[in-house]
Amino acid sequence: MSLQSSPQGLSMRPQSSPGTEAFQLNLRGGSGRSARPCACAVDPYLDMVKITDIQDQAIHARLAGAIGAEVYDRLFASVRFDGIDGTMLYASASDEDVAAEIEDEFALHIAAIASLILKRQIDIVVVMPKVLQ
Image 1 (cartoon, rainbow, N blue to C red):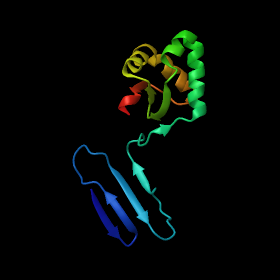
Image 2: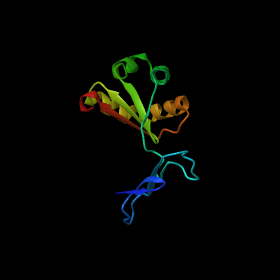
Image 3: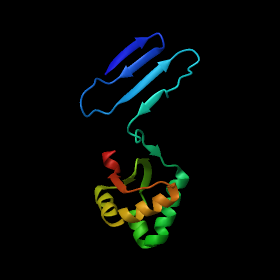
Image 4: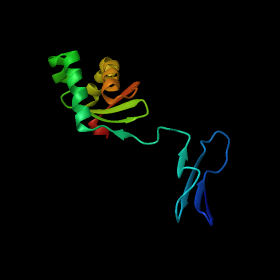
């Protein structure tokens, strides 16, 4: 990574090597008018998007209706849907056994319900126990 100074501002560019993702960050003073964006990246999935409490509760409500109260109370009472990174939905569960059972048995249900509520494609559900966070 190299940082270069020019009369237009600071530019940060990665060292060129085969197979690396290209990006450019240009910080300019003055009017800031430029034909190119300030930050440009090849990978569109840079940051995890947080899920709001309302979205979390909506996913829980649909799940409870789909899987039944007994199973929902046993597995999902302590689950929190945390965020989205690309097409991955992250959740936290009370312990490792609950997290594993949710991923094995209900990942497809969660992905379908979350896709409808969040209006984004969810392909993978990752459930981590709270002790590992």
